[in-house]
Length: 624
Image 1 (spheres, rainbow, N blue to C red):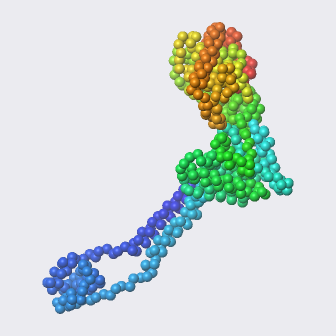
Image 2: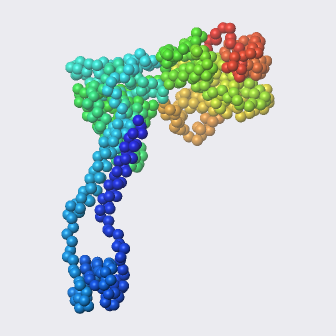
Image 3: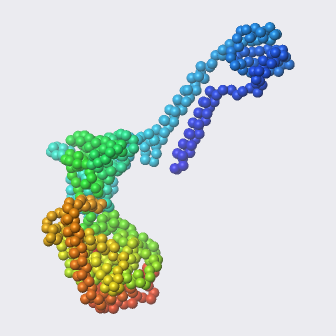
């Protein structure tokens, strides 16, 4: 079906080319006659008396010789009367042809054909619609997708953001019965800005609002309005709102609005000016709604800090709805929604998995379940097991296991001591998060990792942060203690520890020598943050010394701790070298001195690479 328009276009182009060639052929000159002779030869024939008759047609001379042969030649200029008289005196019959009357129809037909052909090409391409439904010349038409039928998504399909749904129910009620609000003189917010990290479900909940209200859903992206042509973006904004007015009541959803709604005056250049004009038109359209309008504009962004203030003032996007990462109960609800249609084994505990994944947003959880389903299908199993869920979580966090990576015994031993040091620091330091899993199976760029049982927390105490610094340094401490040497494996550990120590001093006021001054301001966004320095060089030197002192103190504390529990460090390391992966229950058994059972000789196919013992009691797993 996709080849038919291409064939039609091909035949149209070929036909147009033939018509153009034919039109130009009408104006082309005739080819030179085969009996043409040079003008000097013609003069020689006259002097020799061999010419019988001549016919003069302007500069063209047609003649016959006395032997009845004909010829054609061209004079350099018009033949005057004296020359004709001389030719007559030599016995040559001379005939002068008058000017020909050109066909006026042909002179009119050729330009008419060319102009008509141009109009035909323009008409054809203006009617020829592409896959998006727009014709080739509709630059100013909006690229928004119009769903005249309400989406099937409802609030039942959205989990993990109950507060956001409660706040949006008012919008649903207004779209269902706008007259009730208009009679009371109430003004419903024209714009609703959904703010949250990537993957938190902003687009999904916008579709759910339209589905609950059963109104058309017009979806566009901020980048759809930005073009290289001057005025196209503003024209598309006007067309978008004209379309919405024809389908009212409805919802306009603009995804990634920061592409067009960035703060004005931030740069110089034609592209930036064009984007600003597009934003100006968007602001005008938001103000242009009548009081009784039934159009709600919803937009999504993960960069609210870069939006223009005029876009966020009352009367435009005056309501912001935060959609943050879900808590443990929200994650469990999201897992239940995405688990529909997937055959789960009896050992799958979604509540346990929810506690295992703090910080995950809806997209991460959906990806986790999809990875688990892929793992089960790859092993030709009919149901998804809890082991698939655990492996999928590790894949999402750290990447797939590098089972084919060739590791020397020395590197494997160093990794085992390093990760055992992290795990023992988590276990023995008072305010540290206990270990959930420790492994020496390489994943991503890590040769191994020790995963803590982190819980959802809104506040971090000084003792807990200090404990995290100690845990981060424990891997290097274990290397120093055992090998009396160090490796490059602690690079990321140092980054985490240094960042925590510096923020404790400069941002959180957790050092007695620096008081309660915010020496460094962090501009946070959902995509990260950047620091703004607000202190002198002398203060910077003091901060560096304080950071170094704090890290050294924690290093010494952890060194003393692992020295006291050197025998436990050896036991955990040997267990890692034997089984490669220990969960929380297995780790505790090793710490207590219990010997783990040997791995079965004929392990299942999916356990041959990383053998481990399934505990008799289900471990109380925490989070990432």
